[in-house]
Image (cartoon, rainbow, N blue to C red; front, side):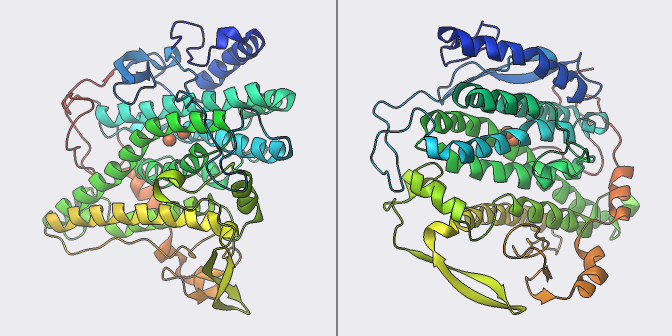
Length: 466
Ligand SMILES: [Fe+2]
Ligand SMILES: [Fe+2]
């Protein structure tokens, strides 16, 4: 690890002067972007953050107080496996690609750019949340997520500069020019243009949208294009904390709501977030996040698998058969206004296979939240909507479905959407609860404290020095 260079790295950057110069030129533009679009109002505060100092599975992180603009953003890849091979598809068993395969150059650049774009987008979406943090613990977690999304941008920009020539450099510049939610220069994916201006949104975003990232990165971590695989493998270790923040964050809101319900059936009376609002936020973020997996039936997905570029979730660990030339997959589609089943070649259904892994993971989290409700002795269950509900991409886009996935008319959807998706009044109510709590050990009324602090520190620890 070269930790003391201008750009910390474990890719021997100083051995490639051209690349090093190019990235050092990008660095001040990145910092300008961070100051302009990063967490508003906290740039000069000491935050107790972890920084990557090694890529070894045990103890890669150093915890200390850091001012965010001085965070050591670096380029870290999992070490190369000797004799790495393509692990799936038509080129199974051939040596892994050390350069971008020519025929997939454009498609692969698109994959890297799309992933890269989500990283700064989420920082932009979350930039004002610090001002309404429910506790110092949560404030610190928000900033940890933000600086690591910044590092993920570095990880992707390294690939663009290092492997995609001039186009890659132009794309890296454009990543600092687009802005989340800006109609003239929006971020690429819709979920990343949605406002994330209250903490329930933030927890749902890190629960559902970051979790899509986990599955995309996992599929790319299997890639036969080795630099991409090794990059994603290390990003996944950071991503785990983001998912933890989301899952436990929603879970703590759910628990608190159940607790408050025992004081007063109408939790609004006692400053809580009612379950029906939480459910609508879940419906909203889950459905937008499902879109991120792409169409249910996809020739791109088939091509990427065939080429050995994008595998399944845990391709090596979970499966014995890695070619998939034969199999088929049956999925519900809409024909003549009715739901019917269609059988497609398995390779064409790989987006849907990955989405299925994601949905099961979300179901597991829902079970856990419902357990919290039951533990408090309250009779209520949260649920996930059908994967057909409120979709904007794929087979179900342009049609209307209820929460159970049954087809309904546009008029019915219009009439009932206030039951299913956050209303303006919901958002205003949640916003009305967002007041900053910054005294160590104190927490806002609408959320339960965490079970433990971070890295052995108690909840009362001064995670951010204000
Ligand atoms: Fe990320
Ligand atoms: Fe993340």
